[in-house]
Length: 207
Image (cartoon, rainbow, N blue to C red; front, side, top):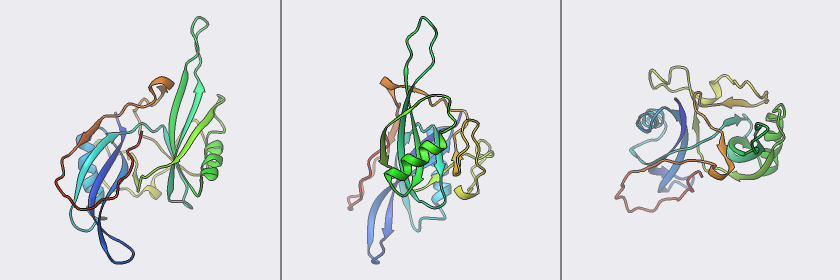
């Protein structure tokens, strides 16, 4: 079963002004286990980050779908809620789901989520939209279960049975991502000790 994992890495980054700074950056990727997530992030970033980098945290992150638009590179985390169908003798439950969408602003993210989910057969609300610190997303590929391979996000074929957005859609097939409102998101976190005392930029972990 594939899931989304947020993997935070620390490395020395050269800034636009030519100076070097120790930073921490989160990446989102599809993997089966924490071990697979760690192995894949080293494979994915090995040719992108110059020099050494360390994995300092891995968190399982429940994202229902990701809507990627080519004209924006800032990710927004959008939470929707709706009432699930229930039997006659049962009370309907409030369900919460998280989505990521690339957009230019909060309003743009709102409009794109409404457009992308326009064919859903339930009425839903959007209680929150926040900027995500995610730097890059490495989605699921058909060969992911057999081997680690790099596949740029822009080359992945869009697929989703429920919605037909204009942007690309990325999912982690096999994961059950519908949560009760009271228990919105389970997180399992591995923290790896790092004795480096240099200054780093802090990013908030995905809820």
